[in-house]
Amino acid sequence: MALPVETFFLHPDYQGTLQSQIQQMIAQGILSGRFQPAEKLPSTRKLATHLSVSRITVTLAYNELLSNDYLTSRGRSGYYVSRNAPSPPNFKSVDPIEDAVDWTRAIGQRFSGGQTPRKPQEWAKYKHPFTYGQADPTLFDHANWRLCALKALGQRDFTPLTTDYYDQDDPQLIEFIARHTLPRRGISARPEQILITLGAQNALWLTTQVLLTQRRTAAFEDPCYHALRDILTQSRCNMAPVRVDQDGLPPDAIPPDANVIFTTPSHQCPTNGTMPMNRRRALLERAREMDALIVEDDYEFEMSFLKPPFPALKSLDADGRVIYVGSFSKSLFPGLRLGYLVGSEPFIKEARALRASVLRHPPGHIQRTAAYFLSLGHYDALVRRMGTAFHERREVMQQAIENNGLQIAGQGAYGGSSYWMRAPENVDTSELEKTLQSQGVLIDPGESFFGGEQRPKHFYRLAYSSIPSNRIAKGIELVAQAIRASEASGPTRKGDLALSESQAKPYHLLKD
Image (cartoon, rainbow, N blue to C red; front, side):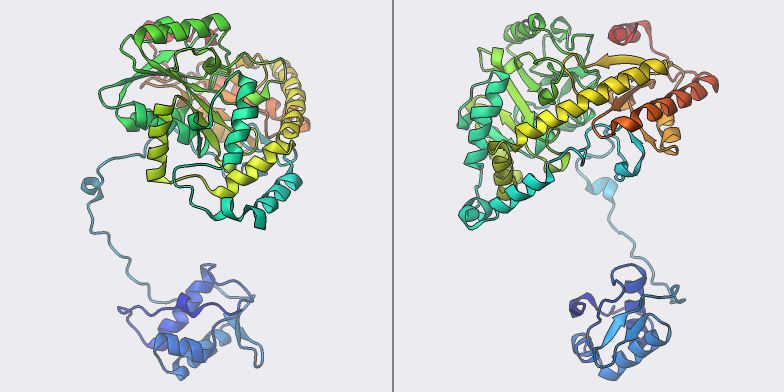
């Protein structure tokens, strides 16, 4: 099949002959990678008709490119992109278009500049990827996911595949979450109280948009999931960070004017602390006294391979003031972008309307594929397989950490997929990350999890979800060597970690 003629067009302001412009247009397409080797070009007749030029003009341009080995000719078959295209010719450069818009004035609201760090897209090419939240292809059930996707594409599922649900969701997926997923967390909910989202982050955004205004206050954990802080900042609400301790969010430290409380009680992000039952009840009582709402992000509850987790905070809620956020992104794969919200009907009604105005609903095919994967038992088998692998990797990492004298600042009591680590105070883990990348090691620096202007820089996270057991020990050894080299290079610049006594005190869960 030839390249479509619509790919080619003449620029009205080009200075030069039609033949040279056609020649340059094709050569630049080849050199930029848009036209691949062995791809067929349009016939001289079709291209001449499309460009409204004479056929001889196109033929001369093709012949010039042929002589320079940009193109090859195959008898009566036509012209093709050469596999040996040379370096670009010295064409006259076209002046770039200058943007006449003053974007500093045109942009009404800014959403860039948040704290969410960028991770290498090619993380799997690193030998020791201790990066968090990526899927391990050796554990995922590719075959059954493919079969479920094909099943969802079948004639029987034509309606859920193609229909516009408007503000509704796939009933099979909703039913599975209501009857199987939520009861495992002690939660009972009707379909009207469940909303499918594009991952937990989308669920947090919807919740923030519905519940918070510029006059309301959000209390949240510090350190916390950095994307949540960005979402709250963009909402322009009043922000009240609350320093966590070894048991998570302390209820007594929540300011009395807070309207919405965000927490990760089962698996604090990023310290991995678990909130005990007495504190969960105290948090609910505190919210009741303040007439505040609680948003519970219950991520990674499936990875409780050491012992069963506590029931979700939502299961203890007798007032309907807890909004529950769940996700399949960590237990299946992050690219799935499938999560869910559970809350009282008035809240879900507004969140549903907001979602419909922004994206209507997550794609029907994705929802139905996930519904099949869950209901046919593949999901439970995957979670068991991941739990077994994570348990082994955790033990290997624990031993490697001890052997290399590294310090653990937090670890999940029930499992999870990472360790929260502490380096010596004069080590900047953002710089450490750059050093380790050159050695094939990926870590997550901890600075972005903290709020404020003077954020500690010596914390970092090591995940074991994406690295095989036989590569962990060497990777930890490289981390330890890099930390020792960084520590020996001298103290951090004055002011980098200059925390006042009142600022430093709340970090006691991270101290020995």
